[in-house]
Image (cartoon, rainbow, N blue to C red; front, side):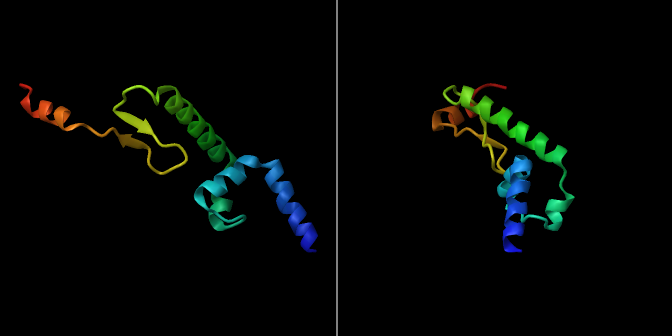
Length: 95
């Protein structure tokens, strides 16, 4: 019986790798209510969104940016730290 359950779990994860990725990302148990309420379309879309922003972040990480993306986290936009000189300039510039 135990071997059958293990085989089914491994088969599920092999058949639906994005489902496994999504559950790990949000720390959601297999067949929990949150897992059953999710959709493959939502998981698929979220996975590709993370890949897109991760690629964008990798391409631009060496450039001077105001904002960056933190993939695989809940922190979507992280503001760049401003220097004291930049902050002083904000207040010294005429409107």
